[in-house]
Length: 189
Figure 1: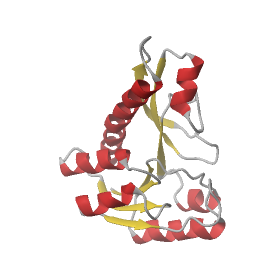
Figure 2 (figure 1 turned 180 degrees about the vertical axis):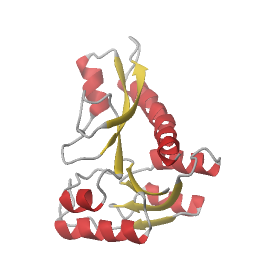
Figure 3 (figure 1 turned 120 degrees about the vertical axis):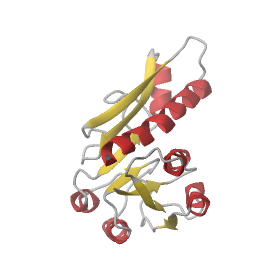
Figure 4 (figure 1 turned 90 degrees about the vertical axis):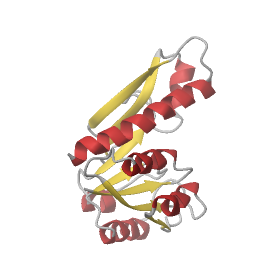
């Protein structure tokens, strides 16, 4: 199962996927490309480190979504890479019909909360500020509704009385780095 990773930032979750692949823990899942909407994103440096194609793809004129032409650029790049599955790992853009229809139920997202609780941005802070006793992360299928697609798997972390926002973020990120590769290995068979 060829996977393409889309990301916008440092690529810590992409790094967890790639390291799991290097160690032979992704089953039949094979990362074939990394695409980023930020030309200087650190996620792109992972390509050289792991021997995987890594490229900037122009996201168009909007900050939080891809315009129609940009979505088509992403579709073309993903198809050219031969992807069977698209993994959103810190890709900070909302997807719309062009991408969703090109890869129906073939796009997964990693979200830093136990959905349906705390969708959208700043989910870890939302849980912390709310006083939740548990947070965590969710891998789900991407649909038109923001963070509303069917849940594939989740990992919970307890929010202890002494936790700070920083310590909670570290716990959730550790859970993400374990969950996402595990889900990919299961999906790939």
